[in-house]
Amino acid sequence: MFTPQPIGFVSSPYKDTSSIPKGLGAKHDAEGVLNILPEFSLGLTDIEGFSHLFVIWAFDRSEGFELLGKTPADIRPHGVFSTRSPRRPNPIGLTVVELLRRDKGSLQVRGVDMLDGTPILDLKPYMSSIPQEKLRRGWLAEAEARKG
Ligand SMILES: C[S@@+](CC[C@H](N)C(=O)[O-])C[C@H]1O[C@@H](n2cnc3c(N)ncnc32)[C@H](O)[C@@H]1O
View 1 (spheres, rainbow, N blue to C red):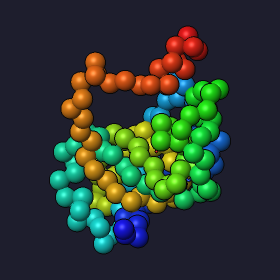
View 2: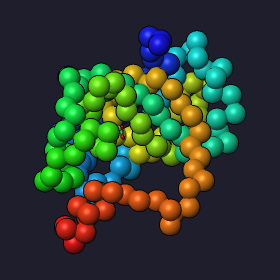
View 3: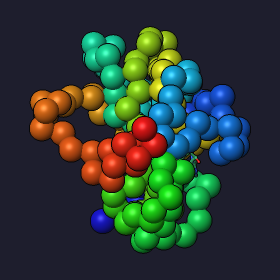
View 4: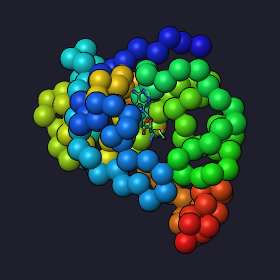
């Protein structure tokens, strides 16, 4: 195993968790900046060509974990590995953002759902080759259908 080291920090409009949209139909279109530390900025070479990025980050302000719990999207409990709960055994977050522009080591992005100051662990270009008709959305699709 390895000891994760932040490659940068998120500048986000969200200062507390209550201000982040949650639950079914929540829209994540807030803009933020991924500030990459100077010692890692060479690694951003060629990133401008990608429209979307995976941001892998640390839930640095969540405590402990819950293997079975409720989420804001449903009244029924679900296993942590079938949710995006911040309270997980390894508190790692994954967010897909749209890359709007790069200014040296700063990436202006749309779609942040993390708190201001969140440590970034990694960035990868977003790619998906899974056709829409092959995707299943499990309990989330059922919760959406119940809501109508
Ligand atoms: C449901 S999680 C989803 C995060 C990410 N998209 C994922 O799937 O891993 C988003 C929530 O995590 C919480 N959160 C955001 N940044 C956090 C941080 N740095 N530490 C702890 N909790 C955080 C907020 O309550 C936010 O609404």
